[in-house]
Amino acid sequence: DGGITQSPKYLFRKEGQNVTLSCEQNLNHDAMYWYRQDPGQGLRLIYYSQIVNDFQKGDIAEGYSVSREKKESFPLTVTSAQKNPTAFYLCASRKGTSRNEQFFGPGTRLTVL
Amino acid sequence: RKEVEQDPGPFNVPEGATVAFNCTYSNSASQSFFWYRQDCRKEPKLLMSVYSSGNEDGRFTAQLNRASQYISLLIRDSKLSDSATYLCVVNIYNQGGKLIFGQGTELSVKP
Image: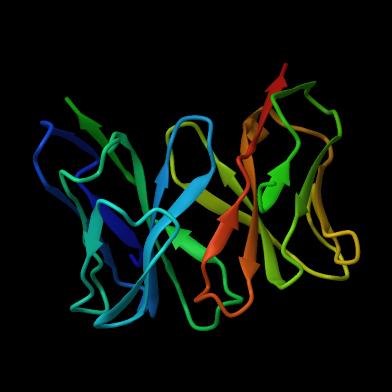
């Protein structure tokens, strides 16, 4: 089945540790995105990538880093510089032109202890 | 002012009711528009795209008014399974396909 997978579903981290969230898609989509959602709020864009080996900062990129070495994969690292990392992280991908909708993975809930 | 603003929720309606959600956007360069549905603690899923001429999908009707920068979603004959948060989403022209999300409106359909 085609789709977007994120792992792990739940993640706990101690303060001061970096952690990497996985996002893989087999939809052959060109663009991939990372969003963060806090309770009662809309999604906010962290980073996005339109092609392999290229990515751009979104609205809240500070404290995060990404890579896009393969079309299928867009991992997000939450660094210790992110002051409030506890949130629901959603990865999405899009086919073709910017008019197309985005499809989301199931998300990773990160809790910093 | 937020780029995409939605009706504050929650909306509590009985089964069978008709409910309307409104959304306004501030960027006139907005190119495409969507309604997504998000169930509790799940990822958003596309409900429908919104076209300039308006479009319908079963019990759901979406309207777009570019002049007023306004989008609406009408749900007829509400079902219990319609209970969710509805997100108004806007794509800005020439910004890499990034989407701007409203904060969502929660709908609760009661028996």
